[in-house]
Structures are given as structure tokens and as C-alpha cells.
Image 1 (spheres, one colour):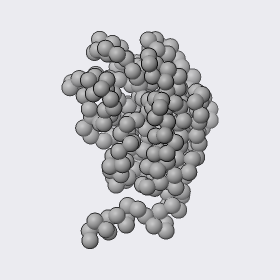
Image 2: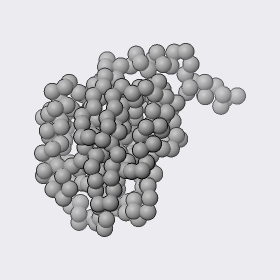
Image 3: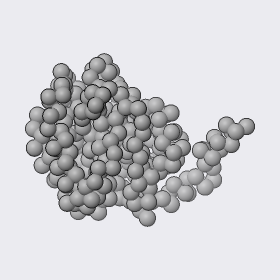
Image 4: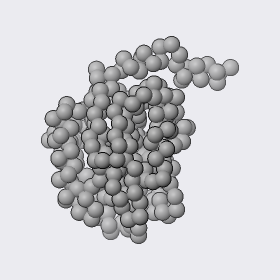
Length: 259
């Protein structure tokens, strides 16, 4: 069974949650019309990413907004991964919330590797993975800086993930991450990676776009430049089987570690 993955490269409407929800609905309508089964939005899409002085009060309406996203998922019969900052019992989190195509919340992933002084001062890091199944594929979630650590991606592959989706807010001058590192993460683990970056600017940050859907050989199945766009690609499990047939990195690593 083939899953059509959609990656939205764009930004919400700063300071206007309802306008951001309307834009999300437009994207989901377009993705549904294209036959997508899963749509991934960038890091912080629902709330904005870089918000100096962010407090719990700034996120008071986020749960209501997330409920609306769940309603859209059901309306368009699409699974959704939505990036946004949320509240937890432990404090503020940089999260990605997963919805099924019936609108049911399947889980929340909290970014584990926080980037830079602002994130470290603002958020409580996550401590566990989040995985779910859609269209016959096992899917793991990471957020932005997480994917720069090979250990986290390898852990997803070892846990059986066929696809890792990565809501992202990659800013200049770090475009080499999108160009060089992300395809290698797919290739070295023989998995699909859906990398959903933002566009435009926010405060002093300029986001570089360059979202991509990488195949298990590291080659792009779909890629973007810097403009807002909807990326689409068919993720065929046969590509995984073909890439792993001659030599499986995970199988060979397992044999090596056993001595």
C-alpha cells in the first residue's frame, strides 16, 4: 500500500490564531484534493516559532485551536502532524501533535534536543518518542534540531519506523542542514524522511525553506526552494524493500554489535 505524503512549506499568520487555522484548512483542502493521506506542517506553525518572552498566557487558546485542527483532519479525512508550542504539566513545550483521519489525537511529540539559548530558556525538553501507523507505514516524529543527531534517527529506524516526519524552523545561515544532512539521515537508515520547514521571517530570523521528502536511498522524491509550497510524494514500501535487499544497514549493524 502506497501512502501519499504532503509537506506544507509555509508559515501561519503571526499573532492571529484564527487566520492561521483558516490557512491550515486551505492547505488541508488542497492536500485532500491531491489524494494525500498524511499532511505535515512546520515547527511552530500553529503558534509561531520564535516568540521572545513566550508565557503560558500566550498559549491559553492553543488547546481550542488544536481541537479545531482535529476537526479539520476529520473533515478532510487526512492524518495531520501539526507543529506548535503547547502547555504541559512540566511547563512550555515545543511540540508536534498527531491526528488520525478521524480527528482523534494519536499523540504529542515534544522536541528533545533544544536549539540555542532561547529554546533552552523557554521550553522543557521532551523525553520520549512518538510513533504511529498510517497506510501500512510505521511513522516516527522528530522536530528540527533533533534530526541533526544521528542517534535519534537511528533509534526511530531500529524501532521499525519506515518514515520519520520532521516539522522544522530552520533559519539562515544553516541551510546546509536541509541540503546535506537530511538526505544522509534517510540514506544511512534506509527510511523515508519528510522535512517540513517554514518560509519567510519572524522577528530577526529568516527561514530557508528547502523542505524535502527523501527516499531510502537519500534521493529526493520532492523538494522545494524558498517559496510557500505543498510538496507531495508517493511513499511505496517497495522502495524500502528494494533499498534494503542487497544490504540492510540495520541488519548488518545488529550482527556487528553481537560480535
